Image (tube, rainbow, N blue to C red; front, top):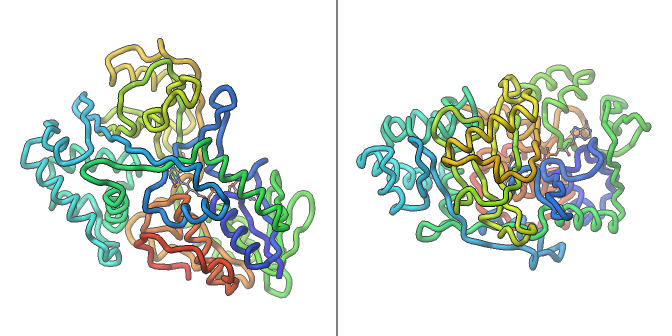
Length: 449
Ligand SMILES: Cc1cc2nc3c(=O)[nH]c(=O)nc-3n(C[C@H](O)[C@H](O)[C@H](O)COP(=O)(O)OP(=O)(O)OC[C@H]3O[C@@H](n4cnc5c(N)ncnc54)[C@H](O)[C@@H]3O)c2cc1C
């Protein structure tokens, strides 16, 4: 049995690892010049690697902790207490637990209490399927009340999902709140990070794959699928054909749609109906921190970023030669003018906004900056999304599909990519060796199985 895996992001690498453990011959084909996908890193100075997009994981993420253990990397994991903030009404509030909520005077006391109670209630809801057709903002309007919803939830969801914010199901929000609630104790959240960045995981995984005989072809763009007797028999690349008994696609579904179009236009249309949001992350290297908070949600209108993530309030600046590293994060549709804005204009805009936010000229402390854009950063999981999730086994013989969309209603993450990869390998009947992957906390309905 030989399997061709398209895409060497978290899902493709994890699937390849599990297949190789089960004794399957694997070739992974990746368009970018190195494996990793959204786990890509860059040199943030003096060789210190940092993710293009901020990444942490949770204490209860069983799958990634299992994989790190298998790869001998458990001792590289740092778990630390982190802090959250909320910027609203021109003020930065700590936003970690009930005490902070009581002090959040951007809304009235009744609104604060309703916000706290409804959030706690929602985090306990596990029956996601009942909550799939109900908009979470509608639910919050009712239970948290319009004051708290308009001041907190609506701006946060708009920054994450744009105009589609009103169509985000309660199921997604319930999963998200549960994930965060489980990583908190007495108002403090503990998060995990891999010392040296996720590059350590990607490099170690690649090393392990090569040792197990997996062929990795980076810098190779798949141009089409080989079809023989109505079944997929491999992939076509500019460097020639790569044949396999089965092909697994882990690439974004609209990209796969273009490959499938000549073979099965109806299926291609279904794949392209899944919308993806882009992400723009500006990383700043500063001489001083902006605040003492790790993660600040920006709930005031008029900002080009929705999150200020001070990485060095999580992993100390000393680890990076004293540099203070900050992400400004924004998810958006590619139709949004910010997507196409040139880097220099974006930087200027964001420095002005940060200066307004923190009441001092931030450019005076700026050392360097980087702007990263990811076209397929997150699936737009709107109402009824589960009906659009393709099955692992596609209608095209020998073609299998596993991607970010299969993670729904859980939040997409490296951990959940590993879980989806394990489920896929199981669904293909090639699970020997993959079966030992523990299944952590999840609301997922195994739609793709
Ligand atoms: C801003 C941001 C913050 C995040 N924060 C976190 C976090 O804190 N914690 C966490 O766990 N997760 C986080 N994630 C999510 C996490 O990065 C993803 O869930 C995960 O990396 C997705 O992996 P994937 O393999 O499914 O997709 P991808 O990483 O997108 O991999 C798909 C791969 O397919 C390749 N490809 C595409 N087209 C072709 C083609 N035609 N031929 C060959 N190859 C092709 C791509 O180059 C890519 O390498 C974050 C993501 C973003 C964008």
